[in-house]
Length: 491
Image (tube, rainbow, N blue to C red):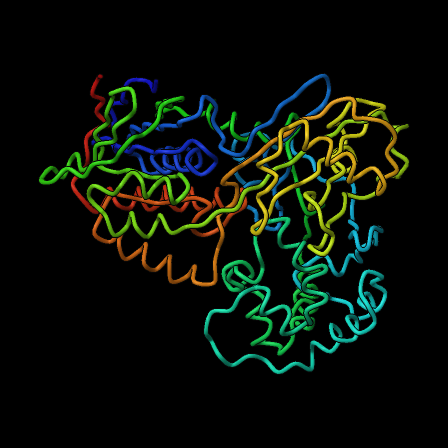
């Protein structure tokens, strides 16, 4: 429970946040921060249906093993997550990926991926020629990319359509699709190119070539300080970020293990516009509500007063994802595990879509003398892994990795994580969907939507959206009559 309201002479701001993942927590953190900076008081209630906070950020530690159910690190080129970590006083706990590079599994064999080909387009024609996972026609087609005329039609295009049009189907399907699926878990031919990678369209229009565009971008980057690695994490696990926010919130009451059943719009009361009802009979009056939940869940809450918005939100599609952690004594794995792991194109059939060598990527995530492997399952066209038991998934993952990594025997330990609605899918029509959602929100002042369903999937983008939502909420309260604190009604 938050402390008693401070008497600052200004009327307090009230807000209810539904969803205690990183987006909802970021909203609360930055809303409190804006309130301190601008000199007004704040009263917030945050409702999370699970007993623990963090959404898909969940860390489990067991006898020296650190197991991440969701993301194991955060992208550095998008600075919002590391900025938040430093803002929370966690700078000394930040550390960076240690193992560089990755491989691609093709025809049962691991092929190193040249570093210049780890992005959304290859930067070096020479490395394309050296890519052993491509056929000679595939290499030739990819290196002809600068000669491909740029697309003048401004209509929405799928990511797979753009990449295959410029670089050829073989490079797209063999490497670029699994690189992208490792982030978004989706079908590149069904996701919007400009939403996921807006720089690709910009490079094509400005330079007439993705290859030239990425090279020019890299040249410009060389004159600026570069991050020490691609990803960072926190000692003790990603959940430290979640715990740090929760521990430092001063004006936010956190309600865990309770479900928000409905949000109601109250007519004629500008000070208490919304009523958020919980499954235990409690209800909270508030002038502002932020729904930091998946879009479909948000749609299920607002149907009584915004049926059009509810219908739009229910259209969001998701894909199931999962992972299997396997721990082995080091001597049972012949492979040197000298990079971060490997990817698999869809032509390599099976449930496993890739593998991260966690003990190489993040030293300290397994006890000395052991290796920790994380095999991934599920993507947009295949959620069949959900039909398998945990025991079956461990067996499938072990037998898939055995010939690739030279594994002997069974794992000492294993952990299975599943997300039935793991990742939202930014379809080709995603910009139109966002416009429709925004139009519907115009008629619902004080209602805010934020999170991975909308304008960025990864943790840094969710932090950014949380911060932007907090700033919009603060601006909203200055444009209307000051609201009263959140009022709780008992069961």
